[in-house]
Image (cartoon, rainbow, N blue to C red; front, top):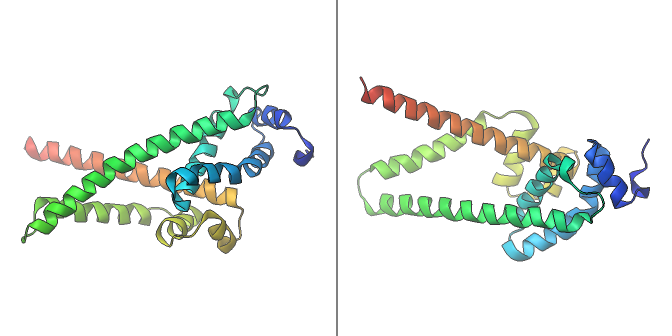
Length: 197
């Protein structure tokens, strides 16, 4: 059995490149607090910082074969985190501007408008997407995104590790995105069929 606590970072990276999940967990716990602090200084949001850190380690796992074990992990990890943060902020700014516009026009119009319907349908779609998820991913999503718990608090409530919460959140977000993408594709297809009747 590997004693990961006695391994050097280079050895852990070599094991990670061989798909060793124990080495990944060790690297995760060695770096998570400092990385979270680094991100939170920019975002000023503990929840967003947790999401960025989670996505960073998911990307680290996905790119494990490309990591150079001869180089320190920290610069590589922080580069992933900064890129992830920039992408999230760009996407968030875009989504906020759209929602703001929908709310603005919905409030300005006394009668129900197409924009108000669109806003309500978006909320309904999100609820449907959440209801399509089952098991631990759904429990994690509800606790972290709806109830506002940290990953650590959710892990304690569910009796699992923080890294397990990370994995479940990643799965939940992936399933929600896939559900919404599928429903949007159906809506477009239905619109095309209706137009060409």
